[in-house]
Length: 350
Image 1 (tube, rainbow, N blue to C red):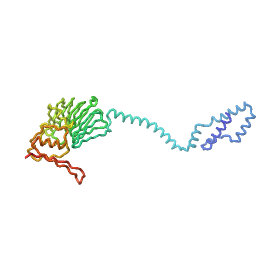
Image 2 (image 1 turned 90 degrees about the horizontal axis):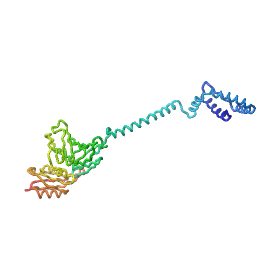
Image 3 (image 1 turned 60 degrees about the vertical axis):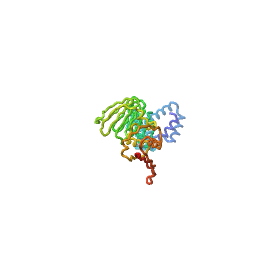
Image 4 (image 1 turned 30 degrees about the horizontal axis):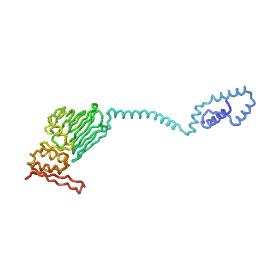
C-alpha cells in the first residue's frame, strides 16, 4: 500500500477508534511512528518493503470496515437509531403510497368513464311567469321552457341514460344517441326517447299530463299500479293525455303544430274554455286573472296571437268576444320591496 493511501486510512481509523467505544480497540500508528516508518523505508530493500506491506494489509483485513463505516456515519450525521428507523420507514411508505395513488386516480377516472360514479351534481334552470326560455343541454339537445317551468339534469350529463326532470311545459329537440337514450321524468311517468321532437306539459296545478309527438318516436313508462298502460308508444301527430283524478290515459290524433306553437311565441287558442284561457294568460304574461261573472266559464275562444304584447291581446279579446277586461297595474309592496303582479279583471259586457 502506498504511503498516501496508508495516511488517509490512518485518519479514518483514528476517528473510528475515538467514536465507537466498544470492547474491540483498533490500534493505529501515531504520527511519530509514521515518520520512523518512512525513515525505515528508505533503508529497507524492496523485498523488505513488500514483506512489511503484506503484514500491514493483513492487519487491515482484520478491521470490520462495514461496521466502522455504519457507526461513523451515524456519528457524523447525528442520527439516532430511532431517526434512522423512521427515515427508512418513510422511504418504504413513500414507495407504497405511489402505487396506491395511481390506483385511486385510475379508479376515479374509470368510474366516470363507465358512468358508475355516484359523485354527481345537478343543474336546474327555471323560467318564471311571463318569460319563455331556450336551453341547450350538454349533449346538444335543445329545450324550450314555457313560462312557469323548470328542468333539472345531472352533471356529467351523457352517461348510460340522459335524465331530465321537468316541472311545467317544455318542447324538446333531442340529439340522437343510440347508446344513451334520453329520459324525461314528469310526475310518476318517464318519457323515453332516442332522438325526436316532442312537447311535454305537466304543470302541478293542471288536471292532466300531456305529451304530443311531432317527429320520431317516444315511449311512455309508468308504474305498474297505474291503470294507464305501463308502456305506451306514440307516433308522430299523436297526443297522450293522462287524467290525474281518474288515473286513466288516452291517445288521440292531433295537429302537433298547434300544441308546440308556443315555443315560437305564438299564443294559440283552439276552442279554449275561459278557465284555461285565464291560466294561459297568467303564465304567458305573468299576471293574475280574475273572472268576475260565472257565466263566462261557458265561453270558448279560438284565435292566434303572434308575439303580441298584453295590451294588444286585451284589445283583440274584447273586440272578438262579449267580454270586458280591466287592467290594474301591479304596485310596489312597501314591506317586501317587490312589485306585485298586475291584475286582469274579466267580466261580461252588459
